[in-house]
Image (cartoon, rainbow, N blue to C red; front, side, top):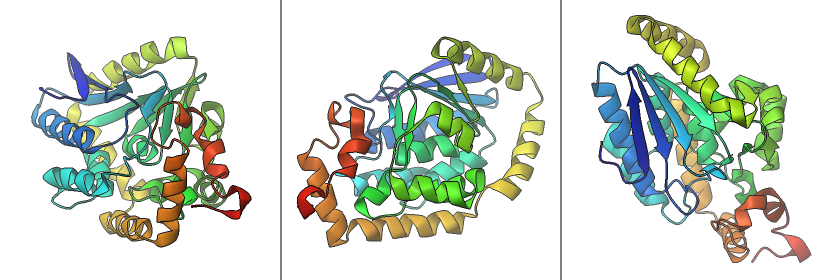
Length: 277
């Protein structure tokens, strides 16, 4: 695979995909394009059964969507799913015959959180993983499945807390809320995920497909719900209040590596002094 932003390594029936999109693993059109290519090629390889995603950047798994290039990202997603929607791209991954595992270190916010939620399993480093659905800081709904997944995983009250607060959640609380499968010590995470991936890959592939199909029938929202959230996100981003909040965030370093190390605090202070312009 010749990919610009993803490094791949194959071990028998397991493919390890390491995300590497400096300076902070923003989900831009290049990364979306490479994810589309990776999924297409992995699904076409009958020998592959498990796909593991991890990050080359210890501070950022996927920071969030690049808000300056939303149209391009959606167009890149359409190359796989036929519609300009990150939500439908991620839902395709959930419905794929491949078993997908997210091995999370660092920050995973917004569409980054929605990407790992689309994976079948999520395991995170206790010391470093940070989770957030930050969209309400701009007055919009998560557009790529966050509300659909979190309501099913956490229940109504906790999902509303996460979605309305735009707050950062550490790995231990994310585990308690059901956002992830487990929080593990960083020095155990790699071995645990690798061992689990190979164990799953040793079992018959047909069984994986059947199990995923039946679990998805209960736990995965219909495509129309993802489509609706995607449309609401795009409409919300065009609202003048959302645009004012984005300008305020950009003026304070949004989408820069250093400023986003403590993003929740910055987002919570966007309206200081009664102004968000």
